[in-house]
Length: 353
Image (cartoon, rainbow, N blue to C red; front, side, top):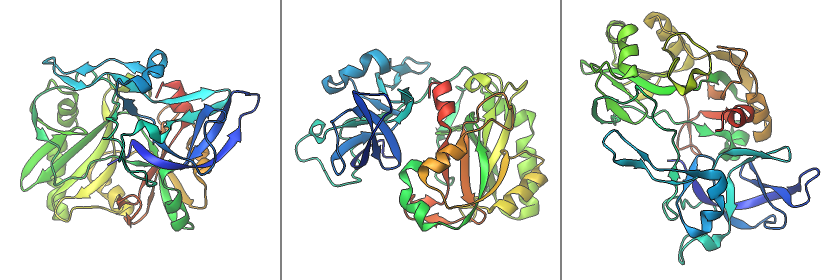
């Protein structure tokens, strides 16, 4: 699980050009703009990443004018995300700032203070999610099934040690698309589809995921390929197009681009060459492939590398890039698959992310 709020150490503090009252602070691989003099190298603090939703507590009230988000409710009126203060990417005096720092005093007595300790629950931080778009509701069969992996990707800013450990290794690079997460699977003769967190009813055509499933004949395709491969499989993709994330790519119809093929029987993602071959068999398109990279980069260099325009529409900034080895591999820092993303700060600033 992502540590939205954790105990970290200040790595360095540097001035910001033409700024008298603020400076930039380095925590993990992130730069954060802070009041000058509040932090010095070696200090321990509570760091909250972007996408954090801080609770309505007195110590966070200074964020209300810039960051308050009202509670979100579902179709029944039940609260699904509480009101709070959203932390996002901002730019001050030309410096991109990602996250926010607090002194350890915001924690209750007896709270852990060792570097890396997860204090997300201790200060009631939630992950901020944008409101569910129209057409993303519908009938639900249950929670996301345990026989499939979720599709969350680790940000490169928390993986400085991993970058050193895997230096010299070849990674393939894909464009990270801004849509909605989707999974379709065949398991023990059953076909199913999932959103990021839920197992959806594939027969409910009020849901855009069900409609794209039907229009692209995914069940028929997965069953046919399953017979040829000899194992149950799943595809994981980004659904993009009209009505989804403001259709940034200007597409005329809803479609999907696949980024994972999963062997359900072995509980293993297939290697990149086999994935591309399977997509050819399925008659489906993958996310844009951007070539390969030999890893010899700092966090800042990879963030700079993430900048650029989308393959799908060169008039818009791409969301970022994802890096993975050609053969699937486990990584101890990530606690799972060796795979990480670098998000384009220009995209984040333009689209208020």
